[in-house]
Length: 315
Length: 258
Image 1 (cartoon, rainbow over the protein chains, first blue to last red):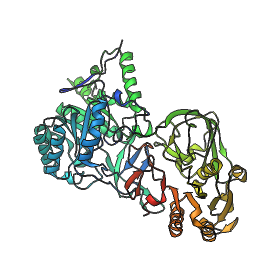
Image 2 (cartoon, rainbow over the protein chains, first blue to last red; image 1 turned 90 degrees about the vertical axis):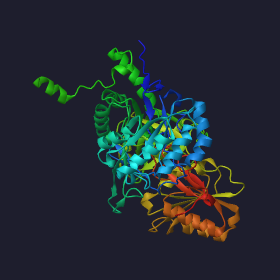
Image 3 (tube, one colour; image 1 turned 60 degrees about the horizontal axis):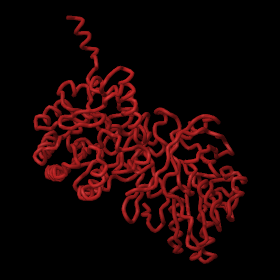
């Protein structure tokens, strides 16, 4: 029996639910020698900003227990370069493309949305990065004022009819309340979660191991937190959810599917095992066969809540 | 946009052990990881499967003989503490060869290699492969020197400096370099350096003073090793470049020294 991994998200049909988290798969073909990008269900780009960004000084990364901190700072060559040099690459590649965008102002969010609206032949969806911990304008500090989130999503919605996900982080505050507000603005789905701010200290120099005090924590260390948010928000809103946060192997991917994730974004694991996405795709098919499932949809949202079971007994 | 790709494979350790007070040597054999290696390129190793340690670690190639690859390393942190416990027959995962190595052709100039600390092994490799006028090695003391047998294949005059004067010239390695540049015609030379950043900065400062060109292996903390994460950027006159792809070996004239 061949297991069908096809994943439907509103108007989008993907051959499997595996994608790569923003900023973890390079700009174009960095991983092409190690993994065939054509096998992915979708590709999420590194966050694109209107103007080029040089990012933060070094050191930008440091290892932590079962994870890493990063303070890259949204380094990218800007919108114009992306449209000119990267869009043709993705057009040729033919894998559904989800472009991650971040603006420093409302006007920039509109500009980005409009720019990608004009490339609907290549771009399948947008992910609005509302929760980068490493930048000022448009980053998690800026977006803590929740009216700014509202303005950002309104601007994107006005600029494009593309399928749009909002990438949120617990750092923003009450994720459930924020999700409720932005979904009312016509945002199609949620991307959960971004990195969590953390720090690491060099005990001899008494300084941060990064060039900034804080960085974004990613990797297996944050997986339980990500899983909880995906479960809770999927249950509360029922909208499409892109899950990310420590997904490293097929077991992780299955956990996120079981709690209801639609798309699974492998992030930091790409840095450690470039073949992680392919291993997960193969593993999902093998698991479906073993469980006698014809398609992956049978797993999605199959979680049996401990609390519901208890209340069921009471009745 | 496209660049050369390395290979990622599981390999079996042929030997791994201490060769003196300072260095450990790891040996394995691999057709792919040994192919077309340029001194200065690196292997990106996953030391254990699982999350501890989590990230891969970059190690420069020390010597490649046929399919046999040698890596010379110091135990400097948690990753190398775990690595040095690995025994013959155990497995490792490694990607390589990665990055841009040292230039083989240096336009009829004479090669001076300036090495310190973990920068010694790749420059010994370079001196074994290509004719080299001088290999200058600087350490804190005699105890940290590489065993002499490891240097017998180097095609170079090897000069030492130790900060405590316990071997060779007393002082920093740049003393040796400045003496050569001051006594001879600096225009004849090309410098290639690898070692602690303050040492390389001093080397570049001297090179600029004498108008000598050269290359430095300038790395930064690295996650992916293939140019995806943008963790290991190096400041150059043309903007920030990735140490793992456009580097780690970068011409002096391009480096913006902090």
